[in-house]
Image (cartoon, rainbow over all chains, first blue to last red; front, side):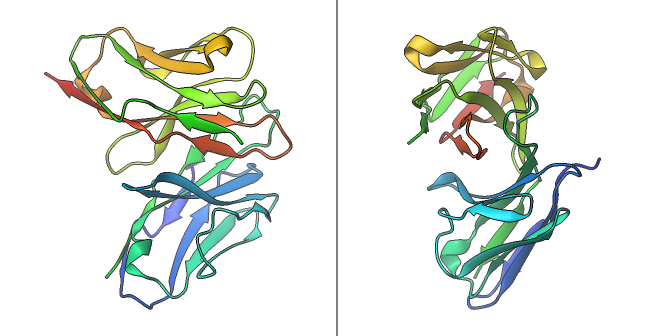
Length: 116
Length: 114
């Protein structure tokens, strides 16, 4: 397996534009996580899914952020409209379910978002 | 609520010296515990994990960590640091519940002096 695949790797957009980040989890994993990493706040969990269903979105900062997982192999994180303070590195991660000895998160390489 | 603290924001060690990175957690039961490493511009990579059993856990790249329940700690150690170990290190806690949400500590940045 190629691991967790995120696209794009870098995104530069103007304030007010819509931004869509994409993630392909590792095949067979039933949990998917979206994290945001900034210097000020470190690594924050935004939302996570289990079997394509959103379980906890309490980390989503505002209504401008939304995430979907239409099937087991694809998820998106959308920001509309984007603002300069959304600039960060966004990571997607996936894992097997709890109770499994392999319950560890595998991370993608991240999308570096810059909103100007 | 669970939480993770890493008291050291930044540590500098000389190449060949020993290393210990501290991690403390707050959780009502025995959690899952992880150490991840992040090299510049990269995602996080798992170094080691503790679920149960032997409290001394061996990981990749020569790292080990010891779970001490009485101290709520899971410190990461390496006997001899290499220049390539310079990176950001994250301790993380997972809950043994039906929802597998992992909380990450703030990270410790490691610099290695030649």
